[in-house]
Length: 346
Image 1 (spheres, helix red, strand yellow):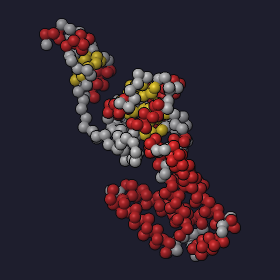
Image 2 (spheres, one colour):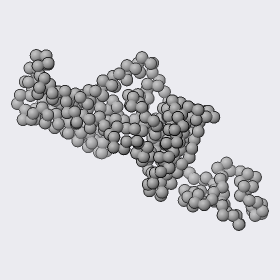
Image 3 (cartoon, helix red, strand yellow):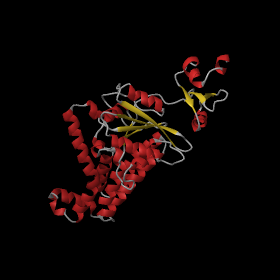
Image 4 (cartoon, helix red, strand yellow):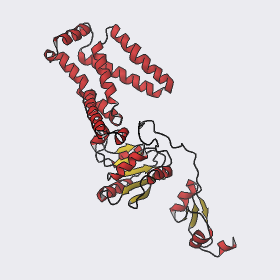
Protein backbone atom coordinates (compact mmCIF):
# COMPACT_ATOMS: atom_id res chain seq x y z
CA UNK A 1 0.00 0.00 0.00
CA UNK A 2 2.96 2.34 0.51
CA UNK A 3 3.82 1.85 -3.16
CA UNK A 4 0.29 2.83 -4.18
CA UNK A 5 0.58 6.21 -2.48
CA UNK A 6 3.60 7.26 -4.52
CA UNK A 7 2.49 5.90 -7.93
CA UNK A 8 0.07 7.06 -10.59
CA UNK A 9 -2.61 4.84 -12.10
CA UNK A 10 -0.50 4.10 -15.18
CA UNK A 11 2.41 2.85 -13.07
CA UNK A 12 0.12 0.83 -10.83
CA UNK A 13 -1.43 -0.83 -13.87
CA UNK A 14 1.87 -1.69 -15.59
CA UNK A 15 4.24 -2.38 -12.68
CA UNK A 16 2.36 -3.19 -9.48
CA UNK A 17 -0.94 -4.88 -10.41
CA UNK A 18 -0.53 -8.09 -12.37
CA UNK A 19 -4.01 -8.26 -13.89
CA UNK A 20 -4.60 -8.41 -17.62
CA UNK A 21 -8.16 -7.02 -17.54
CA UNK A 22 -7.26 -3.82 -15.68
CA UNK A 23 -8.12 -0.58 -17.47
CA UNK A 24 -8.10 3.09 -16.60
CA UNK A 25 -11.58 4.60 -16.47
CA UNK A 26 -12.76 8.18 -16.35
CA UNK A 27 -15.96 10.18 -16.54
CA UNK A 28 -19.16 8.21 -17.08
CA UNK A 29 -17.19 5.00 -17.62
CA UNK A 30 -16.46 4.87 -13.87
CA UNK A 31 -20.15 4.81 -12.95
CA UNK A 32 -21.13 2.48 -15.79
CA UNK A 33 -18.47 -0.10 -14.99
CA UNK A 34 -19.18 0.09 -11.25
CA UNK A 35 -22.81 -0.76 -12.00
CA UNK A 36 -21.67 -3.67 -14.16
CA UNK A 37 -19.73 -5.14 -11.22
CA UNK A 38 -16.17 -3.92 -11.78
CA UNK A 39 -13.80 -3.48 -8.83
CA UNK A 40 -12.44 0.10 -8.81
CA UNK A 41 -9.20 1.49 -7.36
CA UNK A 42 -8.97 5.22 -6.64
CA UNK A 43 -5.92 7.24 -5.57
CA UNK A 44 -5.67 10.75 -4.15
CA UNK A 45 -5.74 13.77 -6.46
CA UNK A 46 -6.89 11.76 -9.48
CA UNK A 47 -10.42 11.81 -10.90
CA UNK A 48 -9.81 8.58 -12.74
CA UNK A 49 -10.02 5.01 -11.47
CA UNK A 50 -8.38 1.72 -12.23
CA UNK A 51 -11.06 -0.83 -13.05
CA UNK A 52 -10.74 -4.60 -12.70
CA UNK A 53 -13.10 -6.89 -14.58
CA UNK A 54 -13.98 -9.40 -11.87
CA UNK A 55 -17.47 -10.10 -13.19
CA UNK A 56 -18.55 -13.72 -13.31
CA UNK A 57 -21.97 -14.74 -14.56
CA UNK A 58 -23.31 -18.28 -14.51
CA UNK A 59 -24.36 -19.18 -18.00
CA UNK A 60 -25.21 -21.94 -20.40
CA UNK A 61 -22.43 -24.18 -21.65
CA UNK A 62 -21.55 -24.36 -25.34
CA UNK A 63 -23.89 -26.90 -26.93
CA UNK A 64 -25.43 -27.58 -30.33
CA UNK A 65 -28.19 -25.03 -31.04
CA UNK A 66 -31.68 -26.56 -31.32
CA UNK A 67 -32.54 -24.88 -34.64
CA UNK A 68 -29.28 -25.56 -36.50
CA UNK A 69 -28.57 -29.25 -35.98
CA UNK A 70 -26.18 -30.82 -38.49
CA UNK A 71 -25.31 -34.35 -39.54
CA UNK A 72 -21.72 -33.43 -40.37
CA UNK A 73 -19.75 -30.47 -39.05
CA UNK A 74 -19.14 -28.71 -35.72
CA UNK A 75 -21.75 -28.96 -32.98
CA UNK A 76 -20.79 -25.77 -31.13
CA UNK A 77 -23.33 -22.99 -30.86
CA UNK A 78 -23.34 -19.45 -29.52
CA UNK A 79 -24.34 -18.81 -25.91
CA UNK A 80 -25.56 -15.74 -24.01
CA UNK A 81 -22.02 -14.64 -23.03
CA UNK A 82 -20.55 -12.31 -25.64
CA UNK A 83 -16.94 -13.03 -24.61
CA UNK A 84 -17.41 -16.74 -25.22
CA UNK A 85 -19.03 -16.01 -28.58
CA UNK A 86 -16.10 -13.84 -29.65
CA UNK A 87 -13.63 -16.53 -28.60
CA UNK A 88 -15.54 -19.16 -30.63
CA UNK A 89 -15.04 -17.05 -33.76
CA UNK A 90 -11.45 -16.07 -32.89
CA UNK A 91 -10.27 -19.67 -32.60
CA UNK A 92 -11.58 -20.35 -36.10
CA UNK A 93 -10.34 -17.15 -37.68
CA UNK A 94 -6.74 -16.62 -36.61
CA UNK A 95 -6.03 -13.63 -38.80
CA UNK A 96 -4.56 -10.18 -38.22
CA UNK A 97 -7.20 -8.67 -40.51
CA UNK A 98 -10.04 -9.69 -38.19
CA UNK A 99 -11.32 -6.50 -36.62
CA UNK A 100 -13.52 -6.34 -33.52
CA UNK A 101 -15.09 -3.00 -32.62
CA UNK A 102 -16.85 -2.43 -29.30
CA UNK A 103 -20.02 -0.40 -28.87
CA UNK A 104 -22.51 0.07 -26.05
CA UNK A 105 -26.25 0.36 -26.69
CA UNK A 106 -29.16 0.96 -24.33
CA UNK A 107 -29.55 3.90 -22.00
CA UNK A 108 -30.34 1.72 -18.99
CA UNK A 109 -29.00 -1.73 -19.87
CA UNK A 110 -25.66 -0.54 -21.34
CA UNK A 111 -25.52 -3.69 -23.47
CA UNK A 112 -22.18 -4.57 -25.05
CA UNK A 113 -22.20 -4.96 -28.83
CA UNK A 114 -19.29 -6.18 -30.93
CA UNK A 115 -18.88 -5.68 -34.67
CA UNK A 116 -16.62 -8.23 -36.40
CA UNK A 117 -15.30 -8.21 -39.98
CA UNK A 118 -12.20 -8.71 -42.13
CA UNK A 119 -10.87 -5.28 -43.03
CA UNK A 120 -9.23 -6.51 -46.27
CA UNK A 121 -12.42 -8.20 -47.55
CA UNK A 122 -15.40 -6.23 -46.29
CA UNK A 123 -16.89 -3.19 -48.00
CA UNK A 124 -15.94 -0.26 -45.77
CA UNK A 125 -19.18 1.56 -46.65
CA UNK A 126 -21.19 -1.26 -45.09
CA UNK A 127 -19.11 -1.14 -41.89
CA UNK A 128 -19.57 2.63 -41.63
CA UNK A 129 -23.31 2.35 -42.24
CA UNK A 130 -23.68 -0.36 -39.59
CA UNK A 131 -21.73 1.66 -37.01
CA UNK A 132 -23.70 4.82 -37.78
CA UNK A 133 -27.06 3.07 -37.38
CA UNK A 134 -26.07 1.38 -34.12
CA UNK A 135 -24.64 4.60 -32.67
CA UNK A 136 -27.95 6.39 -33.36
CA UNK A 137 -30.05 3.84 -31.44
CA UNK A 138 -31.82 5.62 -28.59
CA UNK A 139 -33.63 3.04 -26.48
CA UNK A 140 -33.79 2.19 -22.79
CA UNK A 141 -32.76 -1.44 -23.13
CA UNK A 142 -31.36 -4.02 -25.53
CA UNK A 143 -32.34 -7.52 -24.39
CA UNK A 144 -31.62 -9.47 -27.57
CA UNK A 145 -29.94 -9.07 -30.95
CA UNK A 146 -33.40 -8.76 -32.53
CA UNK A 147 -33.61 -5.24 -31.09
CA UNK A 148 -30.47 -4.26 -33.02
CA UNK A 149 -31.68 -5.97 -36.20
CA UNK A 150 -34.80 -3.81 -36.43
CA UNK A 151 -32.66 -0.65 -36.45
CA UNK A 152 -30.36 -2.00 -39.20
CA UNK A 153 -33.16 -2.50 -41.73
CA UNK A 154 -33.32 -0.06 -44.64
CA UNK A 155 -37.04 -0.68 -45.23
CA UNK A 156 -38.70 -1.26 -41.84
CA UNK A 157 -42.17 -1.66 -43.41
CA UNK A 158 -41.12 -4.58 -45.62
CA UNK A 159 -42.38 -8.02 -44.63
CA UNK A 160 -39.14 -9.67 -45.77
CA UNK A 161 -36.00 -10.03 -43.68
CA UNK A 162 -33.18 -7.60 -44.38
CA UNK A 163 -30.73 -8.77 -41.69
CA UNK A 164 -29.42 -12.34 -41.50
CA UNK A 165 -28.85 -14.34 -38.34
CA UNK A 166 -27.08 -17.53 -37.26
CA UNK A 167 -26.53 -19.52 -34.07
CA UNK A 168 -23.28 -21.29 -34.95
CA UNK A 169 -19.76 -19.82 -34.87
CA UNK A 170 -18.64 -21.80 -37.94
CA UNK A 171 -21.47 -20.29 -40.00
CA UNK A 172 -20.68 -16.81 -38.65
CA UNK A 173 -17.02 -17.32 -39.56
CA UNK A 174 -17.95 -18.32 -43.10
CA UNK A 175 -20.06 -15.16 -43.42
CA UNK A 176 -17.10 -13.05 -42.29
CA UNK A 177 -14.90 -14.77 -44.88
CA UNK A 178 -17.50 -13.91 -47.52
CA UNK A 179 -17.21 -10.23 -46.63
CA UNK A 180 -20.17 -9.85 -44.30
CA UNK A 181 -20.29 -7.91 -41.05
CA UNK A 182 -21.21 -9.97 -37.96
CA UNK A 183 -22.82 -8.25 -34.97
CA UNK A 184 -22.76 -9.95 -31.56
CA UNK A 185 -24.96 -8.73 -28.71
CA UNK A 186 -24.32 -9.58 -25.07
CA UNK A 187 -27.11 -11.76 -23.68
CA UNK A 188 -28.13 -13.17 -27.06
CA UNK A 189 -27.05 -16.49 -28.64
CA UNK A 190 -27.96 -15.24 -32.12
CA UNK A 191 -25.45 -13.31 -34.25
CA UNK A 192 -26.61 -10.84 -36.89
CA UNK A 193 -25.06 -10.73 -40.36
CA UNK A 194 -25.27 -7.94 -42.93
CA UNK A 195 -25.82 -7.55 -45.79
CA UNK A 196 -28.38 -10.29 -46.30
CA UNK A 197 -28.69 -11.99 -49.68
CA UNK A 198 -32.17 -13.38 -50.38
CA UNK A 199 -30.81 -16.76 -51.43
CA UNK A 200 -29.28 -17.28 -47.96
CA UNK A 201 -32.61 -18.54 -46.66
CA UNK A 202 -32.36 -21.47 -49.05
CA UNK A 203 -29.07 -22.50 -47.46
CA UNK A 204 -28.72 -24.88 -44.53
CA UNK A 205 -25.95 -25.55 -42.03
CA UNK A 206 -25.50 -28.99 -43.60
CA UNK A 207 -24.81 -27.45 -47.02
CA UNK A 208 -21.34 -26.36 -45.90
CA UNK A 209 -20.41 -29.97 -45.18
CA UNK A 210 -22.12 -31.75 -48.10
CA UNK A 211 -21.10 -32.53 -51.66
CA UNK A 212 -21.78 -29.62 -54.07
CA UNK A 213 -24.25 -31.57 -56.24
CA UNK A 214 -26.22 -32.71 -53.19
CA UNK A 215 -26.35 -29.22 -51.67
CA UNK A 216 -27.44 -27.72 -55.02
CA UNK A 217 -30.19 -30.33 -55.42
CA UNK A 218 -31.51 -29.63 -51.93
CA UNK A 219 -31.55 -25.89 -52.58
CA UNK A 220 -33.61 -26.42 -55.74
CA UNK A 221 -35.96 -28.61 -53.69
CA UNK A 222 -36.33 -25.79 -51.14
CA UNK A 223 -37.23 -23.34 -53.90
CA UNK A 224 -39.92 -25.74 -55.16
CA UNK A 225 -41.19 -26.14 -51.58
CA UNK A 226 -41.41 -22.35 -51.20
CA UNK A 227 -43.49 -22.06 -54.37
CA UNK A 228 -45.77 -24.87 -53.17
CA UNK A 229 -46.26 -23.34 -49.73
CA UNK A 230 -47.32 -19.98 -51.20
CA UNK A 231 -49.36 -20.94 -54.26
CA UNK A 232 -50.76 -24.42 -53.55
CA UNK A 233 -53.94 -23.33 -51.68
CA UNK A 234 -54.65 -20.61 -54.23
CA UNK A 235 -54.08 -23.00 -57.15
CA UNK A 236 -56.43 -25.54 -55.58
CA UNK A 237 -59.19 -22.92 -55.25
CA UNK A 238 -58.66 -21.68 -58.80
CA UNK A 239 -58.74 -25.21 -60.23
CA UNK A 240 -61.93 -26.11 -58.39
CA UNK A 241 -63.80 -22.94 -59.29
CA UNK A 242 -62.56 -21.83 -62.72
CA UNK A 243 -60.05 -24.20 -64.35
CA UNK A 244 -61.33 -27.64 -63.44
CA UNK A 245 -61.14 -28.71 -67.10
CA UNK A 246 -57.33 -28.98 -66.89
CA UNK A 247 -57.59 -31.71 -64.23
CA UNK A 248 -57.48 -35.36 -65.31
CA UNK A 249 -60.98 -36.81 -65.47
CA UNK A 250 -60.50 -39.49 -62.80
CA UNK A 251 -58.91 -36.99 -60.40
CA UNK A 252 -61.72 -34.49 -61.09
CA UNK A 253 -64.36 -37.13 -60.31
CA UNK A 254 -62.60 -37.96 -57.02
CA UNK A 255 -62.52 -34.28 -56.00
CA UNK A 256 -66.16 -33.72 -56.95
CA UNK A 257 -67.33 -36.78 -55.03
CA UNK A 258 -65.49 -35.67 -51.87
CA UNK A 259 -66.69 -32.05 -52.00
CA UNK A 260 -70.24 -32.15 -53.34
CA UNK A 261 -72.02 -31.96 -49.96
CA UNK A 262 -69.80 -29.40 -48.23
CA UNK A 263 -71.51 -26.32 -46.71
CA UNK A 264 -68.61 -24.01 -47.70
CA UNK A 265 -67.33 -22.88 -51.06
CA UNK A 266 -63.67 -23.78 -51.86
CA UNK A 267 -62.30 -20.45 -50.62
CA UNK A 268 -64.04 -20.59 -47.23
CA UNK A 269 -63.12 -24.26 -46.87
CA UNK A 270 -59.39 -23.62 -47.40
CA UNK A 271 -59.51 -20.52 -45.19
CA UNK A 272 -61.19 -22.52 -42.40
CA UNK A 273 -58.56 -25.29 -42.57
CA UNK A 274 -55.64 -22.80 -42.62
CA UNK A 275 -56.99 -20.94 -39.59
CA UNK A 276 -57.64 -24.23 -37.78
CA UNK A 277 -54.07 -25.48 -38.38
CA UNK A 278 -52.52 -22.13 -37.41
CA UNK A 279 -54.49 -22.08 -34.15
CA UNK A 280 -53.33 -25.62 -33.35
CA UNK A 281 -49.73 -24.64 -34.13
CA UNK A 282 -49.85 -21.56 -31.88
CA UNK A 283 -51.42 -23.58 -29.07
CA UNK A 284 -48.75 -26.30 -29.30
CA UNK A 285 -45.99 -23.66 -29.12
CA UNK A 286 -47.29 -22.07 -25.94
CA UNK A 287 -48.12 -25.22 -24.04
CA UNK A 288 -45.60 -27.28 -22.06
CA UNK A 289 -43.37 -29.37 -24.33
CA UNK A 290 -44.95 -32.80 -23.99
CA UNK A 291 -48.49 -31.46 -23.72
CA UNK A 292 -47.90 -29.43 -26.89
CA UNK A 293 -46.90 -32.60 -28.78
CA UNK A 294 -50.07 -34.30 -27.60
CA UNK A 295 -52.22 -31.33 -28.67
CA UNK A 296 -50.60 -31.37 -32.13
CA UNK A 297 -51.30 -35.06 -32.61
CA UNK A 298 -54.87 -34.82 -31.31
CA UNK A 299 -55.60 -31.70 -33.33
CA UNK A 300 -54.04 -32.80 -36.61
CA UNK A 301 -55.31 -36.39 -36.64
CA UNK A 302 -58.47 -36.60 -34.58
CA UNK A 303 -59.90 -33.10 -35.08
CA UNK A 304 -58.99 -33.04 -38.78
CA UNK A 305 -60.51 -36.46 -39.41
CA UNK A 306 -63.60 -35.53 -37.40
CA UNK A 307 -64.10 -32.38 -39.49
CA UNK A 308 -63.94 -34.46 -42.66
CA UNK A 309 -66.37 -37.08 -41.33
CA UNK A 310 -68.76 -34.33 -40.24
CA UNK A 311 -68.80 -32.94 -43.76
CA UNK A 312 -67.29 -29.55 -42.90
CA UNK A 313 -64.14 -29.98 -45.00
CA UNK A 314 -62.92 -32.39 -47.65
CA UNK A 315 -59.99 -34.78 -47.79
CA UNK A 316 -58.34 -32.93 -50.72
CA UNK A 317 -58.62 -29.61 -48.87
CA UNK A 318 -56.98 -31.00 -45.73
CA UNK A 319 -54.21 -32.59 -47.81
CA UNK A 320 -53.52 -29.36 -49.75
CA UNK A 321 -53.32 -27.22 -46.61
CA UNK A 322 -51.19 -29.83 -44.82
CA UNK A 323 -48.71 -29.93 -47.71
CA UNK A 324 -48.59 -26.15 -47.80
CA UNK A 325 -48.12 -25.94 -44.02
CA UNK A 326 -45.33 -28.50 -43.91
CA UNK A 327 -43.35 -26.91 -46.76
CA UNK A 328 -43.46 -23.52 -45.01
CA UNK A 329 -41.03 -24.75 -42.36
CA UNK A 330 -38.43 -25.86 -44.89
CA UNK A 331 -37.47 -22.16 -44.67
CA UNK A 332 -37.89 -21.54 -40.91
CA UNK A 333 -36.42 -18.03 -41.06
CA UNK A 334 -39.13 -16.96 -43.51
CA UNK A 335 -42.05 -18.95 -42.08
CA UNK A 336 -43.98 -15.88 -40.88
CA UNK A 337 -43.57 -14.08 -44.23
CA UNK A 338 -44.48 -17.16 -46.28
CA UNK A 339 -47.54 -17.79 -44.11
CA UNK A 340 -48.72 -14.22 -44.78
CA UNK A 341 -48.14 -14.59 -48.54
CA UNK A 342 -50.13 -17.84 -48.48
CA UNK A 343 -53.14 -15.96 -47.08
CA UNK A 344 -52.76 -13.22 -49.71
CA UNK A 345 -52.54 -15.58 -52.71
CA UNK A 346 -55.33 -17.81 -51.44
